[in-house]
Structures are given as C-alpha cells and as structure tokens.
Amino acid sequence: MASFLSYTLISFYFILFLALAGNSNGSYSEELSEGIVMKQTEKTTHLHFYFHDILSGNDPSVIRIAGTPDYSSFGDTYVIDDALTEGPDPTSKLIGRAQGMYAVATQHEMALLMVINYAFIEGEYNGSSISILGRNLVMNDERDMPIVGGSGLFRFARGYALAHTAWFDVKTGDATVEYNVEGALGGNGAAAEMVDLTFALPPGATTESCN
Image 1: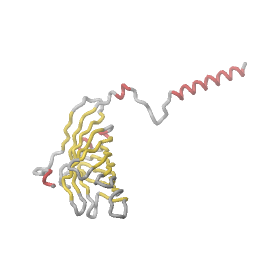
Image 2: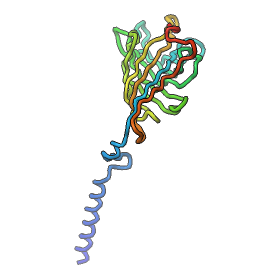
Image 3: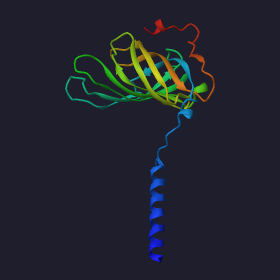
Image 4: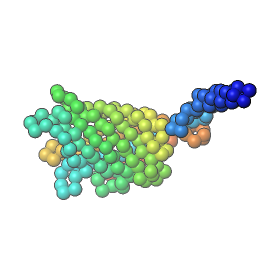
C-alpha cells in the first residue's frame, strides 16, 4: 500500500512538473499578448542634418581597417565616427555622431555597404539613435537607404534616409553629406502625430554654398 501511494505521488508531481515546464517560455523570452502589442502607436518623424566624413588631417573621423594591396578598392572597409551637424559647415552645431562602418561592396561601380548608427546628443532625441543598413550608390545625386531599427525614442524605428553629397574634395576624399530622414517609431500610448524636426540652417547658409 505504501509502495502504491509513493508511486502515485511521484507520478502526480512528475506530471505537474511537465505541465508547468510546458507553459514556460524560459527566462530570456516572453511573448507579448496581442492587446499589449496593439497599444504601441507611431508618429512620423522628419530629421535633417549634415554628415561630415573626414579622411584627411591629424584627427580623421574615418579609418581604413581592411582592403586589398592593389589598385582596386573592392573590399576596402572603413570604421567611422563622423560628426552630425545642423548645417553644412563643420563648425555648425553638433547634434550627434555617425558611428559604424562602410565597405566597398561592388567591383564595377562605386557602391558602399553602410552599417551605421546615427546617435543623437542634442535636444529631445538626446540618447536616441537610428540604425541604417543598406546600399549607398555614392555617385548618384540622391541615395535611398533603409532605416532598420533604433534605440531610445527611436526604438522599433523603420523608414528611409535620403543622402545627397553637398561637398566633396577629390584630393582628400573628405565629404559633407546632407541627410533627410523620414521614419516611423513606436510610441508610448500617445495619439499618433506628425512631427517636423528639421534643423534650421545657420543664417545665410544654403546647401548650394557647399557645392
């Protein structure tokens, strides 16, 4: 009798353990219910800034870390920590840094693979960033690259960035690139709204002044 009771209790606890284990997703993941997910709202954000890619001088913001020894640039890879400013002048107000890398990913045309975080350090978006992963056809007047994510207020961001080379030095490779970014980001329960975050140019400055 005691043996049968012990066997019954062991079987009961074993079945209970399996049931509890089957309902657990583990400590590293948790599925959100549809109701929670649907509470996320979005707002469309427009950002306008300038990206300064500096290879020359004693303090470059771009470093070549890999490449072939021949004259082909295919495979050349660079790590960057470029300034993002309100206006086209490198001395205009600093609003963030572009940090990541790009590589020449084509053999017969000039196109870069861009893997870069654009981290903002000014205003409402201080501490937030957007991430761009895409193809940059640098010889085109305007290039379209996807936003694949972000952090802070740009968490779950998606959208696109339009890049236009405002100035380029053929001898040094230094460049100033104008960015217009349109993106949708997850909200905190507030109603969806349109927000224009275009940074104003300094008095008298124009895009054409950098050409």
